[in-house]
Amino acid sequence: MNKRDYYEVLGINKTASAKEIKSAYRKLAKQYHPDRNKEAGAETKFKEVQEAYEILSDERKKAAYDQYGHAGTQSFGGGQGFEGNFNGFDFSDMGSINEIFEQFFGGSFGGFSTSGNSNRSVRGEDLEVNVKIDFLDAIFGTEKTFDYKRRVVCHNCHGSGAKDSSAMKTCPTCKGQGRVARIQRTFLGNFQTVTSCPDCGGQGQIIKEKCPECNGQGIVNEVENFSIKIPQGIPDGVTLRFKEKGNSGRKGGGYGDLYVNIEVKSHDKLERKGDDIFTTLKVDVTEAVIGSIKKVITVHGEKDLEIPAGTQPEAVLKMEGMGGPKFRGDGKGDQYVRIIIEIPKKLTKEQKEIWTKIHEIKDVKPGFFDGLFS
Ligand SMILES: [Zn+2]
Ligand SMILES: [Zn+2]
Image 1 (cartoon, rainbow, N blue to C red):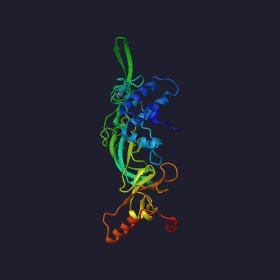
Image 2: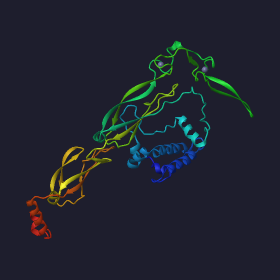
Image 3: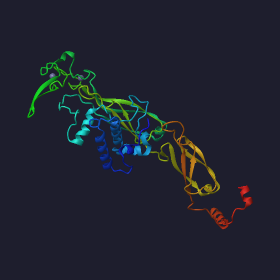
């Protein structure tokens, strides 16, 4: 699918400030909100606007997007529990939409209102982990294992919080129904509302004896040992999303996601831009004048580079195919070598005589025969 440019989606240009991005987003989110706009395609537009804002409002994601386009913000197949696309916004999660719209409109939005019941199910929090990888590992891909702490459903009680199945009893408040009716008196008359039971959280059952492992919480802390596959050519600053690898929610609310921020360590000699590699090379003035073969460090090891006769200071020589493999697709980038010409600071007596001789004859133009013997 061809994704539209995020700036285009929000109708702003690349130099827009954080404030301008936010205000463009608010305007469009209001316009396309599926509760207000029933036109066909409004929901798709709404999601598109959400996604664009999610990236452009985050300094790091925005930088990755500015540099690599959509590739910079996507996750990659191969790992455990991997999502095909980076899409931090989950439309099915009405809770988060409601929060956004509470901020906008100062109150809950029609259809999304939730009771203030602390017993209702709540989705687990998303977690964030920063992972540093070596320069060469980012180029050729690797597998990375790390530990992180998260809250998981208790293995002993499977989240019920009860010691065992006989440690539960029917909730006396709702008599096992999970819902209670309330009469609300207003100046318009009396209204009956049915809400989830405050004592059992809608479960219909309460705990007689708590699970000793989780102390009735249904959730325990755990250190997770997690392994991810880093694809070749991964850009610096990319965030990978692993679905349901975050914290466990409460009362069956499901797991949050795990976001892994990739930071690529720098290399002391090589610099990377996409799949191209950049470096500098010091060349003696005589080598630049008469030409030579020099060893150059590349991501593929040390390679020979021909310095042609007459190479100028700051010349950039291209080593074709000596860059990293492409992030997506086949082929390789190139390496670019910027030449720094070193002028000797001290000369021996003999060298000085030779340089003096060169100086004396330097204005003599090379003739036809000189070309034949060079
Ligand atoms: Zn338990
Ligand atoms: Zn109850």
